[in-house]
Image (cartoon, rainbow, N blue to C red; front, top):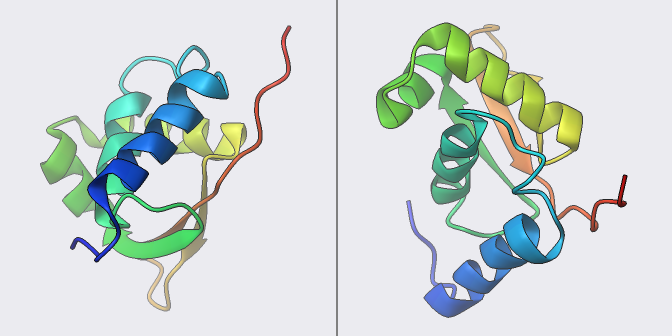
Length: 105
C-alpha cells in the first residue's frame, strides 16, 4: 500500500528517524525488521496508522511469532509505534509516530 508521497521524502524521514535522531542504535535485534515492515505498510510516512495482524507481520518479516511480539514491544517502548487492539482483539492498528531525537545517555 503506497501513497502518492515523493519516495525521497519517505527515505529522508526514515533516515532522519533511524540515523539523525539516534533510534537505530536503540533498536535491538530483529525489531528493526518489524519496524521497517510497519513503515512500509503505512506508505513510508510518519503520523499514520495501519491495521495489520500478527500473522501478517510474521509472514512479511519471516520471523517467529515470539520474535515479532518482542520487536513490537521494543518499538512501543521506544515510542516508534503505538498499538491498539481491534474490535475482535486479534488485529491491531499500529500508529507510526514521528518521534523526537533521543537523548544521549
